[in-house]
Length: 410
Ligand code: ADP
Ligand code: ASP
Ligand code: MG
Image 1 (tube, helix red, strand yellow):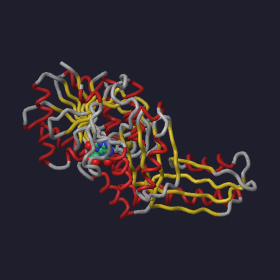
Image 2 (cartoon, protein in one colour):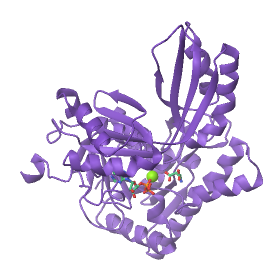
Image 3 (cartoon, helix red, strand yellow):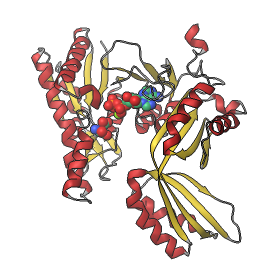
Image 4 (cartoon, protein in one colour):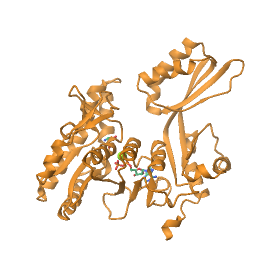
């Protein structure tokens, strides 16, 4: 008998029929003798619909009230899934994130998990019940509901798996983690396994099959995470910390992101402290900035360019304009139609030539690279949004990612 924490994403619980499908799958696991805690997301695009609904009321909804609103999406699917389990004769109970013991800080819309107190969940499981936990939400010290950022149900599941020392399975609308988004690249190949490091790089650069914070938690607590289909019985992908047998000297995957905006502050006086002056107000407003580049200074003036999520642009610009004025910069220019393409693989650090090859492929596709950033195992190019699809396909082909890896053929 194993205790397993499963997670079913929005598209896997997007209709009554799909919720019944999930209930039947959970029943099979229970019948096989396992104890199941399942974390659910809001049905389909419910979270987006709720955000759009709030926008019809006000342009600047209070974050606390947004969390009250958004948390209802997950609450709804948790209750419906329990009803479906009851119709199958499975003893089950739904718990909100707070009831299940998820404690967060009070940064509404992007709260951090402070602790999981799984006493209630354990009690219910010990009574022989399946527990359905509403994902993406927790309770602050002040007993307010807080959500933990988009894609947060993944993080909820890994956090509960860590707290309960259980297995962790993420069920979604694809069969696993592929070499690129299979919706964009039909030849993309499913990976048998992938390291935390590589998955974290892919996830944080746009591969939304897993939320980056969930991968990070998995790595910190060494929880292997299985990503698999919620409708098909195909083998999935295991994200784990074991030695990477297959990946040496190869690109493992390509991530892309269409949700990128770019801000440039031109002619910034080049003196100590300006970067801090620019980025502190953004951090205070909980705006995450991604790639940052500062050009070589010419006559003590430099340009600073950085990227951020497109949705954050409107909120960030007034802060940036105010600082630009205060420090005597020339002006601020923004481009909201940028995108990002990244190649990821542990092989990148041990073999030269990947960067040159990536740039050559993009240039042959007529794509202009605006910014380049790297980590030890990743190379990212910021390019126009309209070129991203072509870039991903060209890179997938050039790096021959559709071809089986050594371990696939063993
Ligand atoms: P869920 O609703 O289950 O949380 P998401 O929509 O958040 O599902 O994530 C699954 C989607 O991630 C897939 O439908 C796929 O289009 C996308 N995706 C992006 N990159 C990858 C990748 N490398 N492998 C698999 N899926 C990917
Ligand atoms: N419903 C939330 C979102 O859409 C959380 C999740 O699905 O993981 O971001
Ligand atoms: Mg998701």
